[in-house]
Length: 481
Image 1: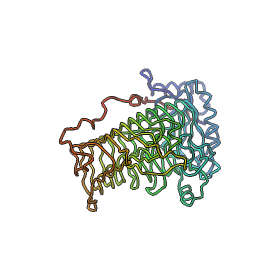
Image 2: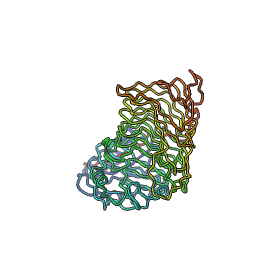
Image 3: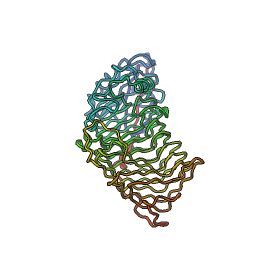
Image 4: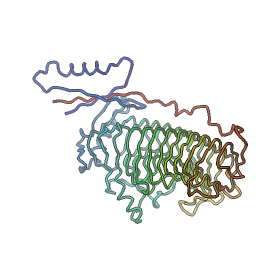
């Protein structure tokens, strides 16, 4: 039998002393009973919790074959009663925990032990069908409904999904095979999706083999994603790493992603549905990201950006063997805007393109999009970029009659691959300026001379999400022997 408790760090807590008091409390007067042993671990979280349980307390069995969907949901439903009493944490012990989709609750932490693996069920019936997102109008893979994500939350406050680098294995191979064969009637599940929620932390986990997108906060605010390792085969379909979607105040940092699609894809709705819903993604920080994505972008802005994307700040980005750096993709019919984008400090090795923008991405949810809904792309800033083994410096394609404007690129050195293109800058329907960029940019981005550009400067102020700090929390376990 195991009992569970948790605490937060404070100046008056001495952990070893507290353990001594607990051992004394549980051993006085029980000489003939079972002995007691306590241990504990620390974890970093935006909020500590007053109540706790283990999934094994609710019938969970971590043998890799027993279905634990009901155990997870029963544990979370039980712990939800403590939302107004200091919140709760659900501990996932070492083991292989097979489960289908389950729903989270508010003021709640899901914690995976370093030796815990959540195995996503491959049984489609374990994933309830839910409505398409209102800003998309349909599923991304198919018309109509979509499968609920493995870990799902809606209309929540203060939710943490974390661990000691425990693993969530989406077992996506079966889903990829069915998708490629056209055998799915509904959109594939994501690993983690949180909707219409605030104060979210997703951290210190390894996510592998997602059926589709890995992490999808949508219609959320105050989101911190940090310390994730996300791995998928580089030819797996649509296995985006982290996709903030119509979110405000989001911070993504210290993540390592190998993906079959974009490592980070910033979104805000699709064509007329996104325009009608009208919720932008804004105040986004991405920093200390490492990406490998041979067929996609390190950071993509769009293509579903009809609600708008603004005030994105990306820095200290490393990419290896990836198609493009920070990419903007949109199309006639999208509407919306991408503006006030700031990128600095990219180190890129083996790239098809360093800079890529396109206004001809296509892909519409239906034929009802407005052909007069023209996206606005303006004030796009890149500085301090070093790249090597590059096939082509830039492919920048705006929209005829509605060029992408305010592009600023400075202090960029690009080393070319042996098979590099003769034409290094292919620019149409764009306008902007450059300074200290090699190889020489296209005529639509005239060189202003060394040190003559202030417009590429990274903002000096900080966004509110940068002030969201984690604290040290403690989780105590009592073992009877």
